[in-house]
Length: 134
Image (cartoon, rainbow, N blue to C red):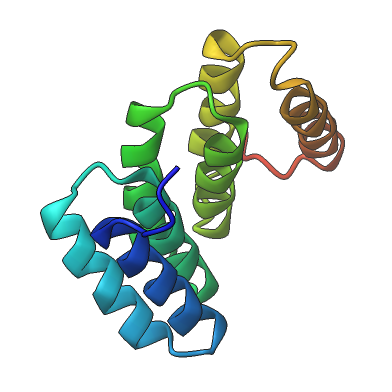
């Protein structure tokens, strides 16, 4: 492995340092610039979605997470991020739909923790009646 970071890795590290230092605007702009060159960079997309979520820009976070779900449909981390973005917007039925979508495609062994988390969430929703009925 080379001791030199690639340009993309260096830009990701800079963006991460900015975000961790509280410079969300600068970090977000750096990620957007990187994504112009590397539109499918999952690490940059994950960070960008996280920035939007942290800033309570849930619709923007949702768009980023939707893109990631298309790239990695069986990723529990991404599925939960999308689920949370939908829930924060009060879109309960779509959030439950994301649980169903994930369960239908994910590796049950590899994503065991996510399955357990979703089982707890589903039970809590059922018990509280949080999801509006049809």
